[in-house]
Amino acid sequence: REAFSDAKQRYGAPRLTDELRAQGYQFNVKTVAASLRRQGLRAKASRRFRPVSYRKHGLPVSENLLKQDFYASGPNQKWVDDITYLRTGEGWLYLAVVIDLWSRSVIGWSMSSRMTAQLACDALQMALWRRKCPENVIVHTDRGGQYCSTD
Image 1 (cartoon, rainbow, N blue to C red):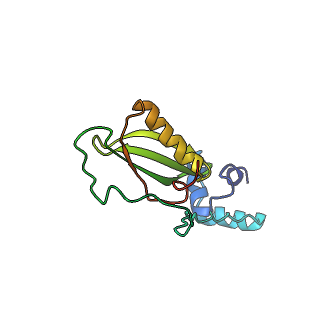
Image 2: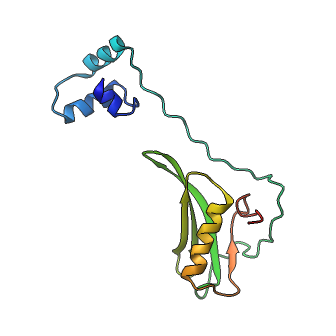
Image 3: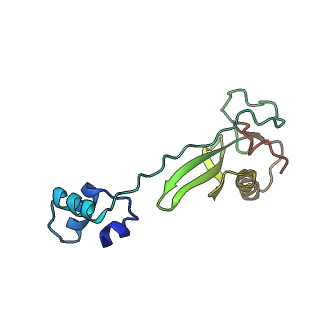
């Protein structure tokens, strides 16, 4: 029961058996499965994560200035910005990154448990701060709701 609780009730008999063996106990899968059944313990199925995507957000969008031209002849000419999601031990996190197309390096980033306009703004603010607010930079995004907000 203790090993089951330590695994946040997510391990079934096979994984729980492996965990117990790593702790020095000698049980087989059938014994662990029978014990779980007797105690009325069932592993919780992890909920499938579904990313949120609202293409029809109704907010004004800027013109696509990049037009699939991802080449830059120097730094701070073209930046791309996007948000992805990462699974962690404590749940899902959203990561917003800004990449300079000239160096292909991350110049700004932000992480949050919620996908908000503030997440996107924080990543862009970091990029502006790190690159000392360059002028005439084209910032290209997927034009999702986080990038079309008034923030």
